[in-house]
Amino acid sequence: MFKMIIFLVAFFLTITSTFSLYGSAPNVVELTDANFKSRVLDSDDLWMVEFYAPWCGHCQRLAPEWKKAADAMKGVVKFGAINMDEHKNVGQPYKIQGFPTIKLFSGSGTPKDCNSERTAQGLVNFALKEVDSMVRGRMGGGGSSGGGSQSGGSGSGGGGASDVIELTDSNFDSLVLNSDVLWMVEFFAPWCGHCKKLEPEWRNAARELKGKVKLGALDATVHTVMGSRYNVRGYPTIKVFSPGSKSPSDAFDYDGGRDASSIVTWGNDKAAANLPPPEVKQLLNTAVLKGACDEHQLCIIAILPHILDSQAAGRNGYIKVLKSMGEKYKNRQWGWLWAEAGSQSALEEALGLGGFGYPALTTVNARRNLFATLRGSFGEDGINEFLRTLAAGRGATEPIKGDKLPEIVEVEAWDGKDGQLPVMEEVDLSDVELDEKVEL
Image (cartoon, rainbow, N blue to C red; front, side):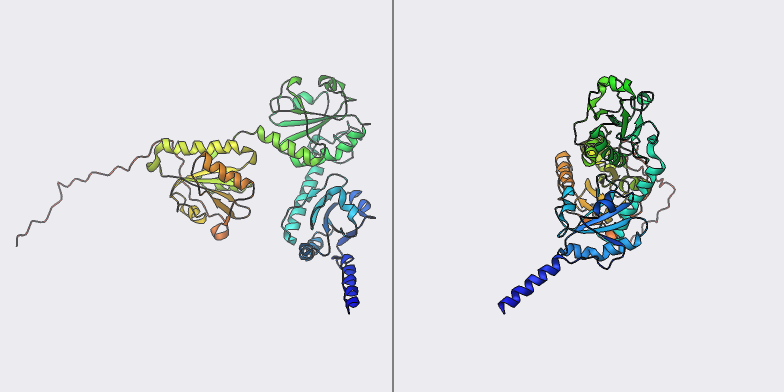
């Protein structure tokens, strides 16, 4: 009997280890050590790839959603799955540490992590966004698809459009110097092996940083004036130009990693350091609310006391605190709003504000319909501790009542002055006939 149990357990484990979650899914490609490079890395298609283990409960729950998404995206984005119990070598370069792990591949460059909801709709939304980004890149290219660069540089080598801007001796000064955005410029040589290795990483980073940091590439073997000006002695050399750079002495060396993720992180940090502090806006109408909350990961909303309760000096003091916090957390690129107590009653109710008195402060994630309320003091120390906890992902949140932000009542902008009590009209009683007193 004991031998029979041992046999059954061994048989079960053998079956489990070779079990595929996607054997009957026609639109999910089973990837292996043998076909991963040819099917995915050497392909021009976008690939959504799941690294899974058949015994993993989360993987088993994801499987039907993955199949639905693959069916929906047939002919647009390819979906694949790798059984890591059988094909461990495929996942090693990507440091797979848990299951399921989902990555998006677009050729041989660095894959992008998929952090969407693990539902068919969430996966489809993520994939469509990447398709849109790829198509826009092919249509536009940021002026980088000229014929000056050869293979090995990031300017236009590889044949496709790119968000990397091709720089030359003739256009360098007009594009890079006196620019109002941060520039990262690669000086390369077409024959340089390290430059060829950097090329896909530079392209992917340029796509991710588009709109925040400009990435350029200059063939220093052809455009020798710029290479000499910036004392380029090896390839690739990456120089950074802050907004408003005017001379060669303003450039400084890039000191980050040479993979797309490191370049993007470094660029975002430097771009944030050069950002002006966010404007703390009065909540005047729905458009102001949408601009601050719908277009940012978080928006901070403060409800300040009525002007008659604080007067101008008190209100300006509260706004000064908000501006100081906006400066401190400007790299987060949050929206910042304030409203007068009682002017937006529906909003206060939806966010559970007012019960602790005024001023009150809350953070709103409009995309997830969640908010978190400051329970401490409305001062720099209290707000800083509150925001620092939220930024670390440890704050307690609640759902917005009604599952969405309410419509905003349109109000007039504060004129910056003290509040005035309404003037009572004097009533002339001289013409009023009073009843004569009746004596009993």
